[in-house]
Image 1 (cartoon, rainbow, N blue to C red):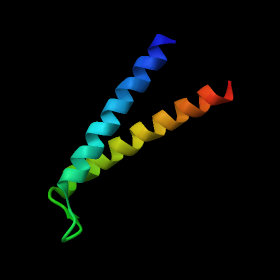
Image 2: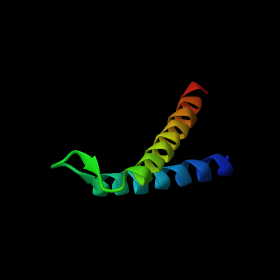
Image 3: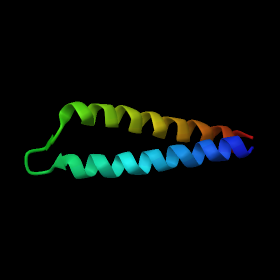
Image 4: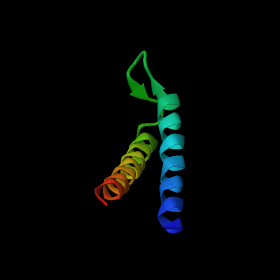
Length: 63
């Protein structure tokens, strides 16, 4: 049980950090990222961490 809790905490921290970084890198005037290549990597990892969090949450509520 502790392993799932640690995993959930880790992915939560990753999602928060990447969300903030993506928000800071996005230019709302031109609607573009400052570094598009790096932003793609950030988005992929951000979406993966959100996917893992949702998947674990659904497993927890099904029990």
